[in-house]
Length: 193
Image (cartoon, rainbow, N blue to C red):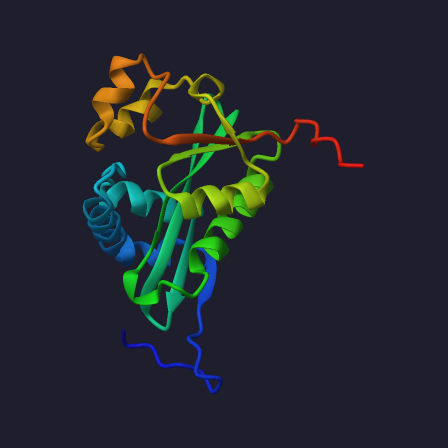
């Protein structure tokens, strides 16, 4: 960690929409994603640095920096003519965990998705309890996979997951991941009396 704490002895992070100036971090993002997948023993789809760089160039990613260090990242993918949007590849550098960064990055990616695609359904699949909590706090709800995108290219991204056989054997109905969906057109649940 090369960043120094501020006068309050806390690290200072900048969380913003990534741009072309950030493409130098693309390989580091991919390395973090792959390392996290190995540690967790569950699938996080492998990403190619050129794909991550293209997300940055188009302004479809959120980056967190601590000084010049990559602290975290997330990007936006659209499916079915932007009817569905996923915030994918959420990762926090282990050196900067326990600072609430995942929540802040995910919230910024959520807001970016809502700004760019206000009528889209936002979705994700995860095995991570903390990510499920963050998604729930943002208004996502658990759903069956039948409520998610049908786009085969999305599901092809699951091939590098060690649990891919579960997904394919069940014809994409069941997996170890939990599907979560934010539908901007859904009615809010009734309030308790």
